[in-house]
Image 1 (cartoon, one colour):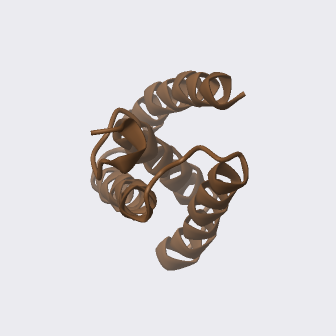
Image 2: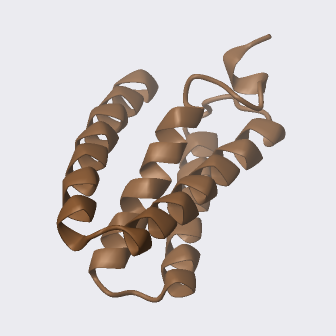
Length: 112
């Protein structure tokens, strides 16, 4: 099956990490969990619209699953950060941030 037609594909992890990183940013800036989610949801939907504009060729199911994976990453990271010490949370967020940037560079390279 073509990459853009699957619900779970190689980019699902990138959406999961991206949602987690954006959650961490909202968490540490003191944004309420739901306000942060609405902002991040808007960014995720905006990204999917950008991909449509760039004619990436994903199915609707794949686009929806990308947003779902990002949402799972968002709430998973928020729950994790809420449960651990601030210093551990910062360390994990730095690692997730590096992974996010690395994956984003790969995505941008692939769609250009």
